Image (cartoon, rainbow, N blue to C red; front, side):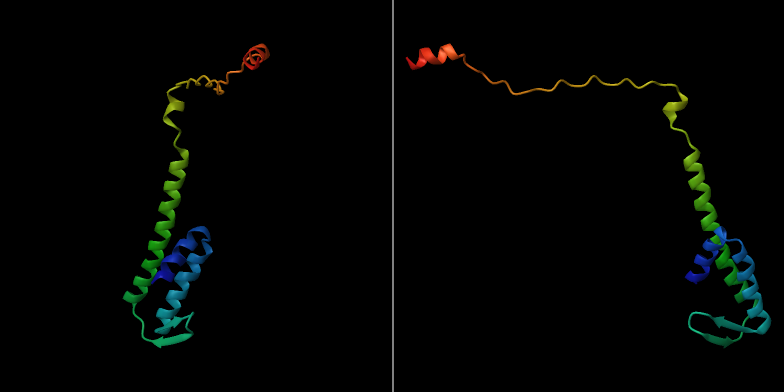
Length: 115
């Protein structure tokens, strides 16, 4: 099931796959068998309901990719609110750099203390 949904998502970006996937399902219906490509098995028996179910899995994947792309485009098209209101942002004044205060005694004071 997952492979059909993922294939439908990929078909959104490569539309030629839509024709190939539907043709693949219709060939299986016409031959009354099911091909399993990844396990290299062929089973007898197929129905129009089963084929419809598989095509709907492709449609679910295609719809999911379409929806994600639609919302992604919508999200990227939204302008920030403040740009449409013409609000200017004030820049803050830079804070002064605070250096530690060190008391330095003068040379003359040192001489007086020593003497």
